[in-house]
Image (cartoon, rainbow, N blue to C red):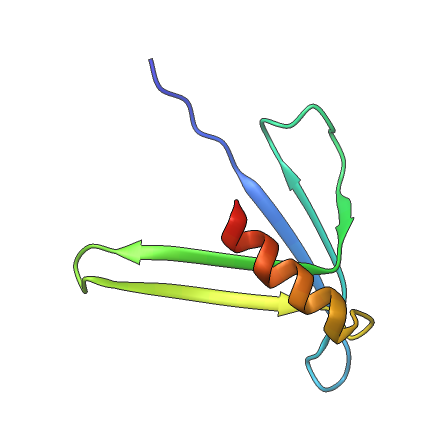
Length: 77
């Protein structure tokens, strides 16, 4: 048996298209509402192009120190 889950990310942008607020939720989560987050990284492997695709977003209130911590902790996951 298979099932489908969904991850939703909502990004609020300022007039320069800079993220100022981000929220996320997953259909398989125990928490049924959007949760705050300050950064988001997504990497996808494209088997046709044999290449990875990625997007990294962070809000304008996130400090450089927190960006570094987020980046390096994702490598440890």
